[in-house]
Length: 462
Image (cartoon, rainbow, N blue to C red; front, side, top):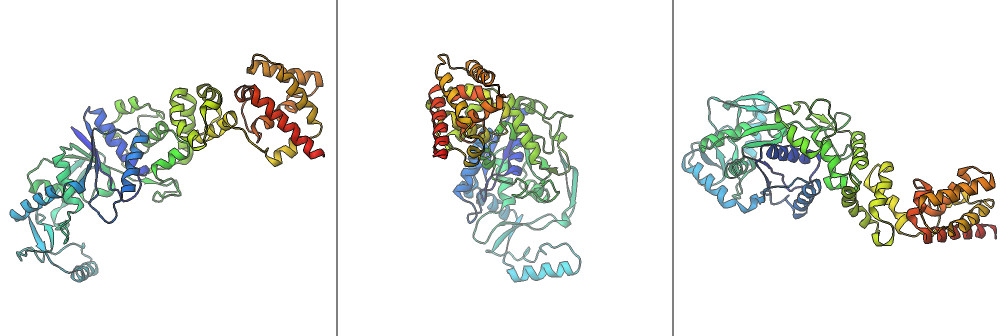
């Protein structure tokens, strides 16, 4: 048994495509079968290498591994021509030389007469030897199939067109190639977006004409924006890798995608193993799902809090590299991540919070410095520098004891010491627990930054 994901490389892999890939992948894993990746690149003008790479990189990042592929349709033109020749030989296909002008005029006339626009069969019996090649669709009867999501679907053959299966330049069309590929690759279940459901009866007639087994079908409803309109960039229909760039974990995105139109009771958070165990095509909702950015962000934060630091570090590495952070120039990253995970909304947040532990800065935030580094703060910072320099065992407990002792000896609140120390350590006043932050900054850097803060105050008073 096999399922497949068959994107066209005419753009990036987006949320809708990733969800289709996930459902097909889950079906394959659930049934202990193979998941095939097929790149439908017969549109030579619009298909690009960049789009192919975006699809491959996106699937790799999100963790949807394939057992076969990538298989490129552009490598299979010989096979498509073989099938087209068979259909021509059996009079199940024919050449058509109708001009574009004639087809447009025919269509306009049909619409004016409130008829369904479709080819009128003008060239069916002409025995032409050139032009486009059309499939001779049955005139009578109907096509009926049971869809896992839509239920029973039925359409009269009289409603269907003699579809073009080969263009005038000899290149095969989608409806032909997808049937040949799904047959040759032994695909048992075709899982795809419901924008393809109108193609399915045409494809079933092709299967029957070629005397091939017909796969099962599951047409997944589209994803809408939060306002009910078609999903666009402003809703989140971005390149899948842009979610990586924004600091989302693939685990969180997969969890979010599986819940876009599929459910298992009221459960919200699923491990991959749970998804595989519980996934059933019949539980896909027949109605469109709505994309909710806030829900995705909530899931992402939940995963950051709950996943082991080893897993987080694996995905954080890409963001640290973007910030030119050298992990050898600071504390153990696993301990740092354990410290930051409770207060990080994304991996971007976490990476930016790491900067102060591994990199020095040249200037303080101007507004914060003028607000906090007052003349009267100088003595507190001098006291901190003096007492912290005496610590032999540099840890959060000993640092905290020094801060409290200064507060007590000067009869001032914790904030009067903590605020200037926080700004001195971070440069912008943003950090978590001040004693832990100082521990990770390290003794040498902490003392250096306190001296830098004192120099800033002195410069303002001269």
